Length: 217
Image 1 (cartoon, helix red, strand yellow):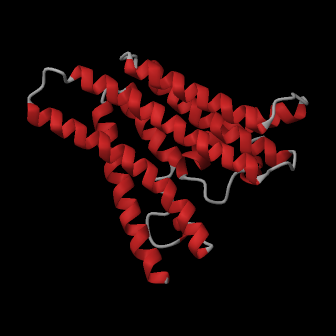
Image 2 (cartoon, rainbow, N blue to C red):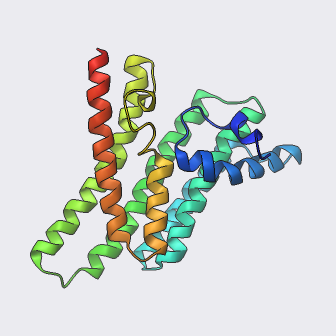
């Protein structure tokens, strides 16, 4: 399932990382599962993706940044497999989408908590101002992550349009992008700056999209 195939089972509002990186791998996995008649269900894949994210959170908390960062990206790739299988088998459902959305939130929280724990313990001897800065960055990254998700859900519910299609920035702060930033920052040894990037990007995206969507009303 390469080339044009990944577009057929992708989602119309995929972020850039999903379109150009994740789907190149996930569609091959989902295509293999469907072709071979492997009995795994989309919901089971959602759970597997969540468990991988939780494990990545533990690895990050223990300071194993490369292993944890890689697993963050693996979890992000596997997260696309559930929906692809559902669409290939024509069994997509609102229940499955709901489960996937909720598990994604637990996955994100596990990743950010693990990374926050590592950074807090690493900065234990830092000056109060530096520690306060770290706490602020952690709060901004976690709140930004959750706000992007809420914006997307509420935007579609209120206006019937996905916020990524309204105004500039497209899907610049989508989940695939946020997790890819965490992955890159961890494997390069700069997790703090990864959180800074996620926090700034997420809140700028939410502010811009909120303004443009408000104008629709």
